[in-house]
Length: 280
Image (cartoon, rainbow, N blue to C red; front, side, top):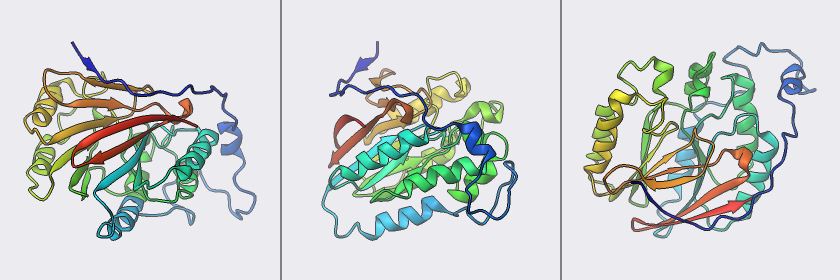
Protein backbone atom coordinates (compact mmCIF):
# COMPACT_ATOMS: atom_id res chain seq x y z
CA UNK A 1 0.00 0.00 0.00
CA UNK A 2 1.27 3.47 -0.84
CA UNK A 3 2.39 5.55 2.14
CA UNK A 4 1.04 9.07 1.77
CA UNK A 5 2.73 12.26 2.88
CA UNK A 6 0.45 15.13 3.84
CA UNK A 7 1.15 18.82 3.45
CA UNK A 8 -0.71 22.05 4.04
CA UNK A 9 -3.02 22.75 1.10
CA UNK A 10 -4.70 26.10 0.76
CA UNK A 11 -8.09 26.47 -0.89
CA UNK A 12 -7.77 27.22 -4.56
CA UNK A 13 -10.29 29.21 -6.61
CA UNK A 14 -11.47 27.77 -9.91
CA UNK A 15 -11.54 29.96 -12.99
CA UNK A 16 -12.48 29.30 -16.59
CA UNK A 17 -9.84 29.97 -19.20
CA UNK A 18 -9.66 33.71 -19.73
CA UNK A 19 -7.82 33.50 -23.02
CA UNK A 20 -9.20 31.77 -26.09
CA UNK A 21 -6.49 29.65 -27.65
CA UNK A 22 -8.21 29.67 -31.03
CA UNK A 23 -8.40 33.46 -31.11
CA UNK A 24 -4.76 33.73 -30.11
CA UNK A 25 -3.73 31.38 -32.89
CA UNK A 26 -5.69 33.37 -35.47
CA UNK A 27 -4.47 36.78 -34.41
CA UNK A 28 -0.75 37.13 -33.76
CA UNK A 29 0.70 40.20 -32.07
CA UNK A 30 -0.20 43.40 -33.84
CA UNK A 31 3.41 44.53 -34.11
CA UNK A 32 4.45 41.51 -36.22
CA UNK A 33 5.00 42.48 -39.86
CA UNK A 34 4.82 38.93 -41.15
CA UNK A 35 2.39 36.11 -40.56
CA UNK A 36 4.11 32.84 -39.65
CA UNK A 37 2.85 29.30 -40.16
CA UNK A 38 1.74 27.65 -36.91
CA UNK A 39 3.73 24.55 -37.94
CA UNK A 40 7.10 26.23 -38.39
CA UNK A 41 9.98 25.53 -36.04
CA UNK A 42 11.74 28.89 -36.16
CA UNK A 43 11.04 32.60 -36.32
CA UNK A 44 12.92 35.71 -35.15
CA UNK A 45 11.03 35.68 -31.81
CA UNK A 46 12.23 32.22 -30.78
CA UNK A 47 14.87 32.13 -28.03
CA UNK A 48 17.42 29.32 -28.01
CA UNK A 49 19.02 27.07 -25.36
CA UNK A 50 16.90 28.42 -22.52
CA UNK A 51 17.74 25.63 -20.08
CA UNK A 52 21.45 26.18 -20.58
CA UNK A 53 21.19 29.96 -20.29
CA UNK A 54 19.01 29.79 -17.19
CA UNK A 55 21.25 27.15 -15.65
CA UNK A 56 24.31 29.32 -16.21
CA UNK A 57 22.52 32.15 -14.43
CA UNK A 58 21.62 29.87 -11.52
CA UNK A 59 25.08 28.37 -11.10
CA UNK A 60 26.84 31.71 -11.37
CA UNK A 61 25.44 32.70 -7.97
CA UNK A 62 26.01 29.38 -6.21
CA UNK A 63 29.23 30.34 -4.42
CA UNK A 64 27.49 33.20 -2.65
CA UNK A 65 24.42 31.09 -1.83
CA UNK A 66 23.73 29.45 1.53
CA UNK A 67 22.99 25.75 2.11
CA UNK A 68 19.21 26.19 1.84
CA UNK A 69 17.72 25.34 -1.55
CA UNK A 70 14.25 26.73 -2.30
CA UNK A 71 12.56 25.96 -5.61
CA UNK A 72 9.06 26.10 -7.06
CA UNK A 73 7.60 23.06 -8.80
CA UNK A 74 4.73 23.28 -11.28
CA UNK A 75 3.72 21.71 -14.57
CA UNK A 76 1.42 21.45 -17.56
CA UNK A 77 1.28 25.11 -18.54
CA UNK A 78 -0.42 24.22 -21.84
CA UNK A 79 -2.85 27.00 -22.88
CA UNK A 80 -3.27 28.32 -19.33
CA UNK A 81 -1.68 31.70 -19.98
CA UNK A 82 -3.81 33.79 -17.60
CA UNK A 83 -3.18 31.36 -14.76
CA UNK A 84 0.52 31.26 -15.63
CA UNK A 85 0.73 35.02 -15.31
CA UNK A 86 -0.82 34.78 -11.83
CA UNK A 87 1.63 32.03 -10.92
CA UNK A 88 4.55 34.25 -11.93
CA UNK A 89 3.19 37.10 -9.81
CA UNK A 90 2.82 34.81 -6.79
CA UNK A 91 6.23 33.24 -7.31
CA UNK A 92 7.90 36.65 -7.48
CA UNK A 93 6.33 37.54 -4.13
CA UNK A 94 7.99 34.58 -2.37
CA UNK A 95 11.38 35.18 -0.72
CA UNK A 96 14.72 33.53 -1.52
CA UNK A 97 13.63 31.34 -4.44
CA UNK A 98 16.54 29.77 -6.34
CA UNK A 99 14.67 28.58 -9.43
CA UNK A 100 11.41 27.20 -10.82
CA UNK A 101 10.93 23.73 -12.34
CA UNK A 102 8.31 23.25 -15.07
CA UNK A 103 7.39 19.55 -15.33
CA UNK A 104 6.59 19.39 -19.05
CA UNK A 105 3.62 19.95 -21.34
CA UNK A 106 4.82 23.46 -21.90
CA UNK A 107 2.63 23.43 -25.00
CA UNK A 108 -0.60 21.67 -25.92
CA UNK A 109 -0.14 21.08 -29.65
CA UNK A 110 3.65 21.27 -29.99
CA UNK A 111 3.42 24.63 -31.79
CA UNK A 112 6.22 27.17 -31.73
CA UNK A 113 3.98 30.07 -30.74
CA UNK A 114 2.76 28.15 -27.68
CA UNK A 115 6.34 27.67 -26.46
CA UNK A 116 7.07 31.35 -27.08
CA UNK A 117 3.98 32.52 -25.18
CA UNK A 118 4.88 30.39 -22.15
CA UNK A 119 8.46 31.64 -22.16
CA UNK A 120 7.23 35.23 -22.44
CA UNK A 121 5.39 34.71 -19.14
CA UNK A 122 8.11 32.77 -17.33
CA UNK A 123 10.74 35.24 -18.50
CA UNK A 124 9.12 37.67 -16.03
CA UNK A 125 10.29 35.58 -13.06
CA UNK A 126 12.87 37.13 -10.74
CA UNK A 127 14.91 33.89 -10.94
CA UNK A 128 15.73 31.23 -13.57
CA UNK A 129 13.40 28.46 -14.65
CA UNK A 130 14.13 25.02 -16.13
CA UNK A 131 11.73 22.87 -18.15
CA UNK A 132 11.56 19.14 -18.84
CA UNK A 133 9.87 17.84 -21.99
CA UNK A 134 6.25 16.60 -21.84
CA UNK A 135 4.27 14.31 -24.13
CA UNK A 136 2.30 17.21 -25.65
CA UNK A 137 5.59 18.95 -26.39
CA UNK A 138 6.47 16.07 -28.74
CA UNK A 139 3.43 16.40 -31.01
CA UNK A 140 3.62 18.00 -34.48
CA UNK A 141 7.11 19.61 -34.71
CA UNK A 142 7.35 19.99 -30.94
CA UNK A 143 10.37 17.73 -30.54
CA UNK A 144 12.46 19.95 -32.82
CA UNK A 145 11.11 23.10 -31.21
CA UNK A 146 11.76 21.92 -27.64
CA UNK A 147 15.33 20.90 -28.50
CA UNK A 148 15.98 24.25 -30.22
CA UNK A 149 14.40 26.39 -27.52
CA UNK A 150 15.35 24.47 -24.38
CA UNK A 151 18.12 22.03 -25.30
CA UNK A 152 18.64 18.31 -24.77
CA UNK A 153 15.73 16.23 -23.48
CA UNK A 154 18.01 14.53 -20.94
CA UNK A 155 20.24 16.79 -18.88
CA UNK A 156 21.39 17.19 -15.29
CA UNK A 157 23.05 19.65 -12.95
CA UNK A 158 24.20 19.82 -9.35
CA UNK A 159 23.29 22.77 -7.15
CA UNK A 160 24.03 22.97 -3.43
CA UNK A 161 25.04 19.28 -3.44
CA UNK A 162 21.62 18.22 -4.89
CA UNK A 163 21.77 16.71 -8.36
CA UNK A 164 18.67 17.26 -10.50
CA UNK A 165 18.21 14.71 -13.29
CA UNK A 166 15.83 16.02 -15.98
CA UNK A 167 14.82 13.26 -18.39
CA UNK A 168 12.31 12.23 -21.04
CA UNK A 169 9.77 9.62 -19.83
CA UNK A 170 7.19 10.12 -22.59
CA UNK A 171 7.38 6.49 -23.73
CA UNK A 172 4.13 6.44 -25.69
CA UNK A 173 5.36 9.17 -28.02
CA UNK A 174 8.14 6.78 -29.09
CA UNK A 175 5.76 3.82 -29.51
CA UNK A 176 7.19 2.16 -26.39
CA UNK A 177 10.43 1.38 -28.24
CA UNK A 178 12.32 0.41 -25.08
CA UNK A 179 14.65 3.41 -25.17
CA UNK A 180 12.58 6.02 -23.31
CA UNK A 181 13.39 6.61 -20.54
CA UNK A 182 17.09 6.05 -21.17
CA UNK A 183 17.89 3.67 -18.30
CA UNK A 184 21.68 3.46 -18.91
CA UNK A 185 21.97 7.27 -19.02
CA UNK A 186 20.04 7.57 -15.76
CA UNK A 187 22.30 5.02 -14.11
CA UNK A 188 25.35 7.00 -15.16
CA UNK A 189 23.92 10.11 -13.49
CA UNK A 190 23.63 8.29 -10.17
CA UNK A 191 27.33 7.44 -10.24
CA UNK A 192 28.24 11.12 -9.85
CA UNK A 193 30.29 11.33 -6.64
CA UNK A 194 30.19 15.15 -6.56
CA UNK A 195 26.53 15.15 -5.43
CA UNK A 196 25.19 14.13 -2.01
CA UNK A 197 21.53 13.77 -3.01
CA UNK A 198 19.64 13.03 -6.23
CA UNK A 199 16.27 14.25 -7.54
CA UNK A 200 14.59 12.98 -10.70
CA UNK A 201 12.47 15.33 -12.81
CA UNK A 202 10.30 14.06 -15.67
CA UNK A 203 6.81 14.42 -17.07
CA UNK A 204 5.18 10.98 -17.05
CA UNK A 205 5.49 9.05 -13.75
CA UNK A 206 6.47 5.37 -13.98
CA UNK A 207 3.10 4.14 -12.68
CA UNK A 208 1.17 5.82 -15.52
CA UNK A 209 -0.12 4.04 -18.66
CA UNK A 210 1.95 6.36 -20.89
CA UNK A 211 5.17 5.02 -19.32
CA UNK A 212 6.75 1.95 -20.94
CA UNK A 213 5.65 -0.96 -18.69
CA UNK A 214 8.73 -2.95 -19.71
CA UNK A 215 10.89 -0.21 -18.23
CA UNK A 216 8.89 0.49 -15.06
CA UNK A 217 10.76 -1.99 -12.87
CA UNK A 218 14.27 -1.12 -14.11
CA UNK A 219 13.42 2.56 -13.65
CA UNK A 220 12.03 2.40 -10.13
CA UNK A 221 14.58 -0.21 -9.01
CA UNK A 222 17.42 2.07 -10.10
CA UNK A 223 16.11 4.91 -7.96
CA UNK A 224 15.39 2.58 -5.03
CA UNK A 225 18.90 1.10 -5.06
CA UNK A 226 20.44 4.45 -4.13
CA UNK A 227 19.61 5.74 -0.65
CA UNK A 228 20.73 9.23 -1.66
CA UNK A 229 17.94 9.41 -4.27
CA UNK A 230 15.28 11.40 -2.37
CA UNK A 231 12.58 12.64 -4.79
CA UNK A 232 10.98 11.73 -8.11
CA UNK A 233 9.07 14.74 -9.47
CA UNK A 234 6.45 14.54 -12.24
CA UNK A 235 3.60 16.32 -14.04
CA UNK A 236 1.16 14.79 -16.54
CA UNK A 237 -1.60 13.81 -14.09
CA UNK A 238 -2.78 17.43 -13.51
CA UNK A 239 -3.25 16.55 -9.84
CA UNK A 240 -1.35 16.73 -6.57
CA UNK A 241 0.15 13.53 -5.26
CA UNK A 242 2.86 12.63 -2.74
CA UNK A 243 3.37 8.95 -1.95
CA UNK A 244 5.78 6.05 -1.73
CA UNK A 245 4.31 3.99 -4.57
CA UNK A 246 6.61 0.98 -4.45
CA UNK A 247 8.09 -1.00 -1.59
CA UNK A 248 11.10 1.26 -1.19
CA UNK A 249 12.10 4.68 0.18
CA UNK A 250 11.41 6.89 -2.87
CA UNK A 251 8.74 9.61 -2.76
CA UNK A 252 6.91 10.16 -6.07
CA UNK A 253 5.39 13.64 -6.24
CA UNK A 254 3.07 14.93 -8.96
CA UNK A 255 2.16 18.58 -9.34
CA UNK A 256 -1.21 20.12 -10.20
CA UNK A 257 -1.44 21.70 -13.64
CA UNK A 258 -1.05 25.47 -13.82
CA UNK A 259 -4.81 25.59 -14.40
CA UNK A 260 -5.39 24.42 -10.81
CA UNK A 261 -3.79 27.64 -9.50
CA UNK A 262 -1.60 25.94 -6.95
CA UNK A 263 2.19 25.68 -6.86
CA UNK A 264 4.59 23.59 -4.80
CA UNK A 265 7.35 25.26 -2.81
CA UNK A 266 10.22 22.97 -1.80
CA UNK A 267 12.90 23.77 0.72
CA UNK A 268 15.84 21.37 0.90
CA UNK A 269 18.55 21.60 3.54
CA UNK A 270 21.22 18.89 3.45
CA UNK A 271 18.79 16.44 1.88
CA UNK A 272 15.94 17.16 4.30
CA UNK A 273 12.71 18.09 2.53
CA UNK A 274 9.99 20.58 3.42
CA UNK A 275 7.08 21.07 1.02
CA UNK A 276 4.24 23.58 0.96
CA UNK A 277 1.27 24.03 -1.40
CA UNK A 278 0.49 27.67 -2.19
CA UNK A 279 -2.62 28.90 -4.01
CA UNK A 280 -2.47 31.82 -6.44
